[in-house]
Length: 323
Image (tube, rainbow, N blue to C red; front, top):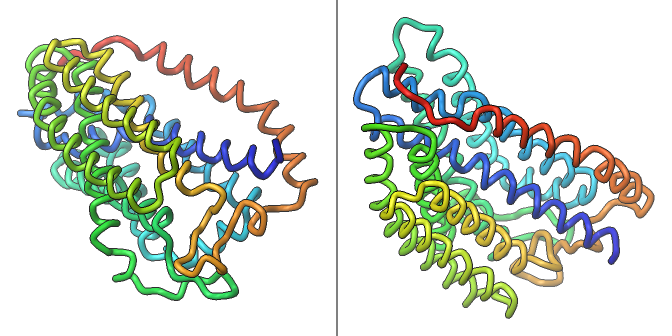
C-alpha cells in the first residue's frame, strides 16, 4: 500500500476518533439546558465530560497537523476556502473551553452555560456542513483555490449534513449522559435519547441516502447501512435501559458515517465541480521522504497516546451523583 493511501486512511481514523469522542462532548453541551433542572444537576452534567473533553480535542489537533504534513495542498485549499466556517468553529471551541474551565469558578453560571451551549451547537452543525461540501465538491480553479462564496457552502445538501451531525452528536451526548449518571438525570437523558433517536435516524438517513445517490461507491452502501443500523440499535438499547450498548451502537454509527464520507471521497481529498481541478491523494501529498518519517513517528507514539487516553476513561468510568 502506498504511503499516500496509508495517510489518507490514518487521517480518516483521526477524524473518526474525534467525532466519536468529541461528539458526546458536543451533545452534552447542547443538552445542558434541556436535562438539568437545577444547579446541582448542571454541575453533574458538566462533570461528566470535565476530565476528558480537552483530551478528546487532541484528536482534532492531530488530524489538522497530519493533514498539513501529509497533504499540504489539501490543507491550504481547505483552510483558505472554508476560512469563515472554520473560524466560527474555532471561536465556538474557544468559548466552550473557557466556559468549561470557568463556570465553577464564578458566582454566576448563566453566561457560561450559554457559552457552553452555543459553543457545542455551532461546531456540531458546521462540521457536518464542511464535510458535506468536501464530499459533494466545490468550485476550484486551476490553482486549486476556492472560488465560491459562503452562500455556496450553505447549500441545502450541506445544511442537511449539518443537521444530521447535530442530531447524531446530540443523541451521542444523551446516551453518554444516561451511561454516566443515575437517578432523575439518567431518566431525563434516556427520555431525550429516545426522542432524538428517531430524529437522528430520519435526518441522518436522508443525508446518507442523498450522499450515496450523489457520489456513493459500492462499499460505502455497506457503511451507510451500518450507520443506520447503529442508530436504530442505540434507540432500541436505550428503550431497554442498556446504556452501555446504546453508547457503543451510536459510536459505531458515527464511525460508519465518517467511513462513508471518506470512502466516497477517495481517491480525491478535495473534489472540484470541474474534475480536472480536483485535489487527489497524489497531487496534494508531501514528498515520499516526509511521509516515511511521519509514518515512523506515528507508529512509535500513537500506541502511547491511545493507552493513556484509555486509562483516563477507565479511571473516570463510574456513574456520577449529585454529591
